[in-house]
Length: 373
Ligand SMILES: [Zn+2]
Image 1 (spheres, rainbow, N blue to C red):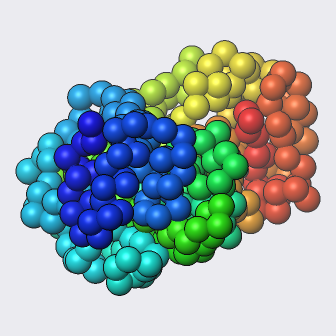
Image 2: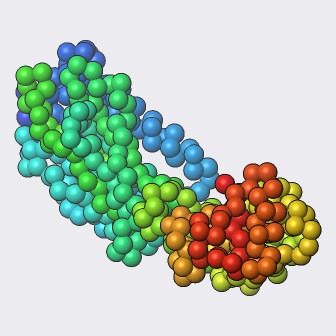
Image 3: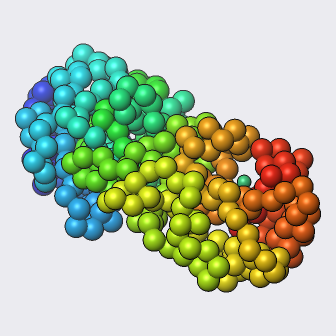
């Protein structure tokens, strides 16, 4: 028997087609399913449930965070959280796009405006689309009016495409780190197409899940959220999808040779009353900066270790994706008299990468850059 959701969608289909579709749904015949794909939206009950199953698995990965859900057909409803229902445009149909064979087409991008920042955005559709189309759509995320993410969708099950080159849905969403306050869902191309000699159209009914608030601070962004946001534009610039996790920020680490005061001297952001930064385990570990200090045999001063993207830009670093932004690099202070000895000492540490003066003109003779890739 067909699900109630399918029945809801069938309500506006002509009577003859409705009978054919119900028959196909009940008999679950291959020919019936192809007819469905060609004439309406490609949704068999099994396929539709498969798409929902995908969503179920994605949500399970969120563990016990409060996941909000909005979906087509429920314009006044948001499930799983207390956030207000986002503004959706166009509002009718709600979270649905389609080519227009039987009804007016709705091929415009869908804009979703949340009442505050959200993260962990995931999307799944059921419906139908052409597998080998020019585009199967994408999700674009914005924060404060600036684009922070743009991710193409994927077919929910590419093995379903088969001879008719039509399948039942897409999955998509933003990197779990991306914080956005609005989304645009771009649709597919083509919207109408031939399916084994009949006229078919794409139809996408979306379900979107997200977690309200900021990943680190929750309802209010804290310093960690502010720093992490700086990485969004950096990622677009460099193509390197790095962003520290909330738990990567520390405020009291030290090594055998270096105190927190020495490690934190160039940090600029505070959280909970303490300066915070990101320091990789390798840099802090026995083959890290302590090893350079040991090879050199005398005290060393760290000029600059962790830099957030803005700090990295302000110090004039030419490295767009500097290892200082990953917490894996340090600049060891030198004079022109000590530069070579420090450089050679760091070069003798297994696993360490040392830049020459020409590779790191921002250091010149005043420091030696060492990182642990
Ligand atoms: Zn450096």
